[in-house]
Image (tube, rainbow, N blue to C red):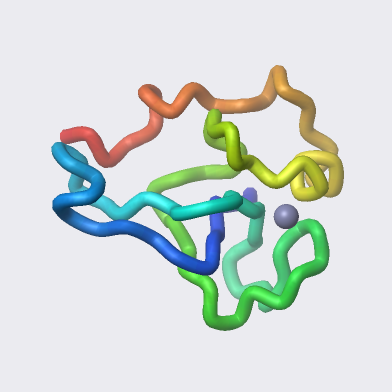
Length: 86
Ligand SMILES: [Zn+2]
């Protein structure tokens, strides 16, 4: 199980109407407890987006992480189906 991880995230006003924060920039895949993304970047100080299982539909999804996870576009979860919109 991978989750979205990114160097930065938004919170509150920038993600209007959503309870959680959203990643800014490219979205990578990371396993809980791992210091690396699926594509091999050091992600120790990156944000984990626990409400966003990877991959979530986004123009900024890291293709290398997709490939490393053995995923194709058919696996992408439409963003509107992911939690955080309550
Ligand atoms: Zn990546």
